[in-house]
Amino acid sequence: MLAEPQIGTKPESRSYRGVVSALFAIITGSLAALVIYTAPQYSFGSELFQEKIIDPLSPHFSAPLENSVKPLERRQIIGFLPYWAIGNKVTVYPEYMDQIIYFGLTMNESGSFALKDKSGNTLPEWNSLNSAYFKTIHDSAKKTDTKLLIAIKNFNNDEINTLISNPQAVKKAIQEIKTVMYDYDFDGVNIDFEYVTKSDFPTQKFYNQFLKILADDLRAEKADVIISFDVNATAVYADMAYDMVKIGDTVDQIIIMGYDYSQPSSLVAGPVAPIEMSDNSPSLTKTLDSLKGRVEPEKTILGVPMYGYEWQTVSDEFQSKTVANTGAIATYKRVRELIANKEGVSIHYDSFSKSPWLTYRQNGQLKQIYYEDEKSLESKVAFIHERDLAGIAIWSLGYEGDYIEPWIVMKEGIWQE
Image 1 (spheres, rainbow, N blue to C red):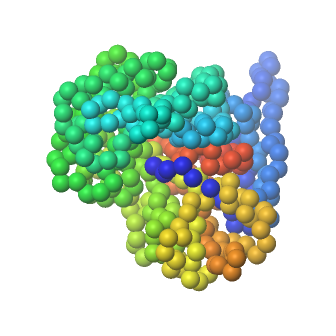
Image 2 (spheres, rainbow, N blue to C red):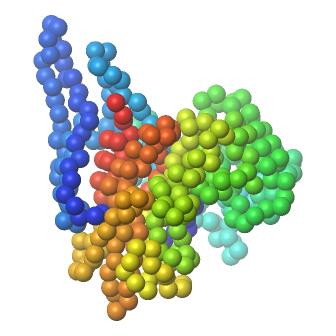
Image 3 (cartoon, rainbow, N blue to C red):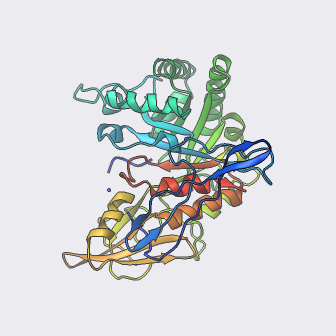
């Protein structure tokens, strides 16, 4: 996952049309009314798109009536809500999501939650969790039947290894997780223990044990608990730290963090979440291919970024070399505003990776941004259907600002005839 940070589309005309309509009433065996709600028009750069959907504020579209030709298939929409977004009071739309995952609480090597920083101040992740604004979001989510999960995180190899290999620490961790779930009325838990470097420790054995004990304990008390697991998109190419077969057997959902294929430190600018790459570089296709036969598609959630990266580059060509130490995050909101307000922005679209990118100049320096827009989000939703995956997870809520277009695209696309 990303630390706290700051996107856009190719300005070509296209129209998004709703794929569903609602039978409003049937009176004495005849169709009385057919109501179609036409949403407002939104402009994105020079692009104008029109959306027709039924009640965009409804948490879920109604199931088709019995006489429908073919039922629609529903996938999950999940949003990660980081603690800093709560602090910034970002707009959250529970009605568009099946799950919101609060990110998150840090667990240390002893199995206890980290509560204070080195100066003795309460960690902001706890301040946000206990804030009135999170309570408002929590209550809104309950009204829309949007499930709430708590993410438990640690990104330190040694601490993770010590925790999962110590039976007393595991016991303590599970009790702490259960307490926070019940105290804050969460519907499940998301485990985000990420190995940031290679580990020679027998991680698979102890990670499997930890997840199995956790899952058995939680399900014994709450049969409908949701247990999900996050893993980096390229970490699954080979079973190194993670035994994906056993993890897939244990948890309810595996969220593949399908981003950061290019990073701020990359020597070459490029797509952050490419569906394919022409040079056979890592991509979403390679990631999902590597999971075949190991993780069931119906348990696999594709993590999608609501951000891109920006670099100073040596040329305006696709995948130009970058200038060292210039990489930075560029959120969806940031790119939207850049396209709307800055002259001289040149927008492109790479059809192979299905990624938009742009160039512009600032203070004489040439910049490139690779990002996500409606067209690329639409492609990723189509990719989910092609791979028969369980859904999509957005990292992260707040990066879209107050723009609602991504949610319209995702909600419409998540249905398939």
